[in-house]
Image 1 (cartoon, rainbow, N blue to C red):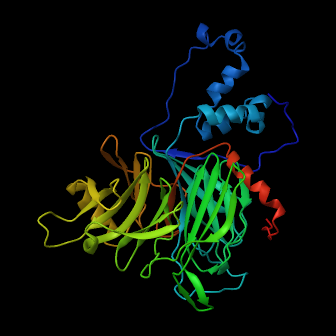
Image 2: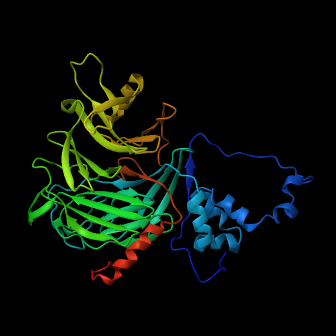
Image 3: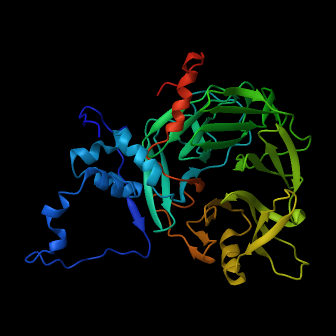
Length: 439
């Protein structure tokens, strides 16, 4: 392992504050007068460093950062290429979520003065540090992260591969920043070619490539927008890159109200409203098309999500003359790409409780792996559905947010990573002139 350099400091002053539900403090009675021979320091101190590193690589991020306080060597693991390579090989995947405070946009917003607050996600964020709230669905625990180095005027738009994509709020060519929230790294992409207001953004990050698609909300005048075009960014380990090539034209009737695209097996999907349908974009074929939504005339608050390589649609169904009561359902898109099959339905007794809290004001869904999280606006209540165990439960409220005061929580599927080496591919773009942000 590389030598420890005391001059290197961690880019963020992280403190993983945690709150969990149903897991109270555990007190253990330890008889110090007769310590167990299994804890003899003469045994554990002889463990090879490689074996210790292997154990540490399995720790979840909060435990890892606490462990860094033990000694200089463990503190330096975050800067060790040897350890990070091991970590990327053996660390288990964690289907966590990252939430942010969200406030609705003002309908009159087109251009604004640079000194006035306001954004995609939080109209009061300018001049203050942005916070994110990491949720562990396995332990039902919340952790708070601070994005102190992120410049003001950016809002979270998408996530993939351990990275969060932030987009500039100002109308015009969009600037995107890829951020690893765990280690605080920031990497800027070149600005888009076309001026846009609040486009839909899709991000797909693999170990060897980055793909970004920005679609809709083209500024056709200082006071009007229209969904006309999409742009794509691609870079891969083979040395090929494409900077914001214009895609094929969008379908004539499309309305990107969701603002976020879902990536599934080489395709981006997003909700289309009025009429309700799903728009799909094949990255390789550079082609857009429309998919009919199930029960499209009776869906309320439909959301697209991805689970284990499959596209899901989550929505409330409101139709008074159905033989079945109102409900919340999950459909899966079949391999043919046109047919939806109902996969799950919220138990009716639970739906009655949910509907009373939601009060037809809409809800926000996010899926990661086997977990579906449903956030209810204006309330600190949220539901978690374990699709493997077929179990519904209420999520403990986030202790860092006051419901109805701080704004509602909107989130992303997020897999915490101590290293995202794919962002190193963007270093080859340093010879291309563009104006970087100033922190």
